[in-house]
Amino acid sequence: MKQQKARSNLDKTIKYIMVIIILAVFIFFAALFIMLLQRSQLILSRYPVWELLFSSEWDPDKGLYGFLPAVTGTFFVTVFSLMIAVPISILSAVYISEYMPSAVKSYFQAFIDVLAGVPSVVFGLCALLVLVPFTRDVMGPLFGVNTTGMCVFTAALVLAAMVFPVIISLTVESLSILPIGLREQFLSLGATKWQLIETVLFRAAGPGIISGIILGFGRAFGETMAVVMVIGNKNILIPSVFSPGQTLPGLIVGSFSEMMSVPEHQSALIFVSLILFIIVLFFNILANIIKNKLKSRWRYE
Amino acid sequence: MNKYIKESIFRVLMIISVFIVVAFLVIIIGVNIVKGGIVLINEPAVIFTAPGPKYLLGGEGGILHAILGSILMVIPSTCIACAASYLIALFLQVDYIKNRFSNKLRVVFDVLWGIPSIIYGIFILNILIAANKRGSLGAGIITLALLQMPVIVRYMDEALNSVPDGIRESAYSLGATRLETAFTTAKYALPGIIAGVLIGMGRAMGDAASVIFTSGAGNSMPKGLSKSVSSLPVLIFQQANSYYPSVREHAFAASFVLIIIIIALNAISRICSKHFQKYTAGSDR
Image: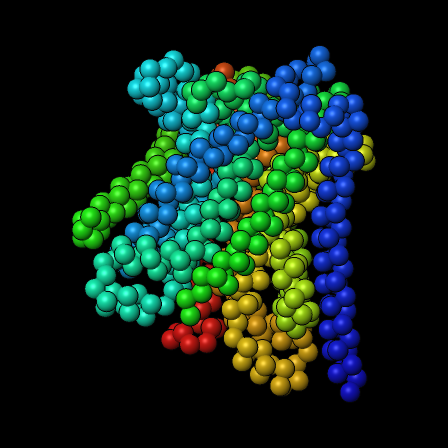
């Protein structure tokens, strides 16, 4: 009897510890948001938000804080890299899951898993060595422009390479949980494999593929180090793909050393992280809504 | 268009894209391994020596401080994150709260996963500034623990969700408490849990953006919890564009070490999941 009491007491204690940890996570989440808001008050009280977001002059020494170059740079790099990565990785994921013999497939998946874990600085380091000269000596002359190689195009290529494993592994996973009967029924009607993929599999695996794309977007969007290493870090509105640019996370890392001294500059950089935070929050919630909507709409059972 | 022609067009496109992906990734891994390997073969002492006083100016020394710093930061932070995440993942199961609430909690963890690591760095940095402290090993450990927790929670949650209800119910029917049941189900979910922990560890190992703000990122050997440390990714980032070739080459050596660690973590996860599969019902081992 005594032992039983001890057991149930332990059970209860652990439950309270769990509740405390969950609350701590919530407090952390709230504190993160409040801290970012509060610390960016300084810059927001001196300049109106629209002026900050839509002015293109960035010169902290003169008190000019325009985020437009970094905002457009971030979106341009992200969208450009997804335009490269999405079609290529979905097509190759379909090939891996539907056409590849299963013996090769498991090795391939192991390979993709390793790649998903490769740190971003490693991608950046290799891009410095391979992609920068490639852009300078091959792509530049091909399009008839003079470039140093440290440009938006290279950054987009690196990001595309980093997004490949994310989208591929999620797409392969959501294709492989579909029942084999679904495929056999459709093929027995005389359809080709591509027709099957196009009309049935993309729909049934749709929610998984879309959440893969959104996760890939998140990775490309928040990626700091690999981009900083190759984009050239010039805070200007980008005139072409082959010119250096700047991204929002790059702005924070790049100005880190000066950040401590000037409170206004520091506040401006914290405002940048607030923007990043809000965008990530927005996209995550959007992804969740889309996934739930599609799940109820594209049911195959 | 004939459907057979369409089929072959798309098949060719798919093969081309698989080749593009493989080429990209083989180049990225290969270049780092070959380049770093050459550096290490030429001067293997790089891994074992501490940096000298003029290290960043092309002086003598090695990357031991970064290797030690990485290990000292990642292992304690993984332990902290692991314990917290296991309790959180258990709490998300049906035993403790209703599905309606746990689904909302899961969204919070998804958002936390998506937050760029640099924001974690900024957050801890602001706390440090408020407390009038400098970047240190302790702050680095806390940052990395926070950074990897959402990842581990997500994987553990999925692993625990895949446990058949029968196992849980039979444990309850024997009179086990929720905690004792949790230990039974953990055995079944072990492959997934270990994979999650190692993936989280890999994320912490390779992240530079958060640690560069909080760990001090200096060039000294780690000396204590409140002293500054460096880590491998930070070292790669700082030295990749250096003017001095020897410093630049050490960045490649560091990336070689980092890739080997990541591959080793992956291999361990695979071996463990094979080994622990014997606890899963329905497997033939």
